[in-house]
Length: 95
Image (cartoon, rainbow, N blue to C red; front, side, top):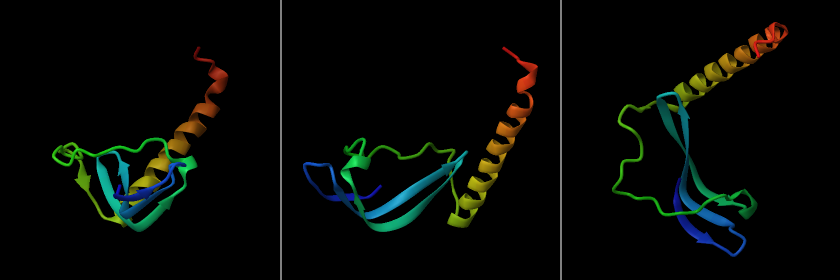
């Protein structure tokens, strides 16, 4: 997210005051990035944001950057564990 300052015919864009929103479960954190240059090949969509509409559902909780990194690590480890368990149980052939 940020303020679009410039773009060209190749969809290269310059964002001012950009920040990365990281969401894990019901927690989120906005990590400031500053001035950000984005190559057009990485752009999928450019559009206006409705500033009067709420950005996030009311149940979302804002946390610090260290807390969100910790939550990401826990989520990644849980996902890897599920993948490992799935591989170990493949021989059961649930299909």
